[in-house]
Length: 213
Image 1: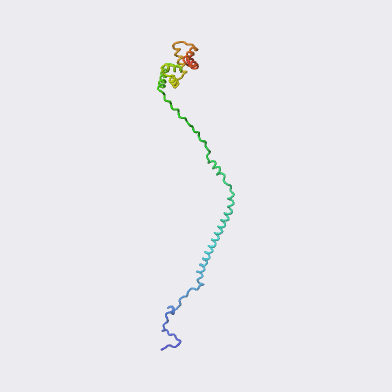
Image 2: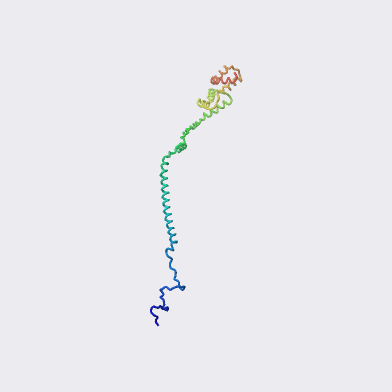
């Protein structure tokens, strides 16, 4: 039997796409309205504004610091330009510069002249002259005469007497003592005898004075 028109048949199935009521009989709560979410949205907006403000403030502070540094540099530049140049450096340089030194004079020494080689006659004349002087006194001239008497040439005899070391004053004193050892003489007589032997007057005076006359 058909139900009357206008009445709802509970046996009719509800399509699946239609929302069915919950078993408790209450509907599901809908999404929260926007005004109830302000406490979440508003703090986020405030945070964003704070970040932007900090960035802007930091940029402004950086600009002000840069401007202050630039003005400080520009204001201090003229002061450094009027500082007088240092003078100590010049004094130190002059003190450090060594004074010119005068080079030491070069001393040149001449090499000794080579000793001439003696001939056989010269060597023998020297040895003979030293032999005579070893046992008696001679004047220079009497020793040359003695060597000539021995057969040496005048040149070899003179060379030999002049190249040996002889103190003729001492020879005059020894000759005066020889004369007084075997005979008596006055002072003047002994001086004359020494001059006759070939001594010079000065040598004869010296020889006689050594005897006490």
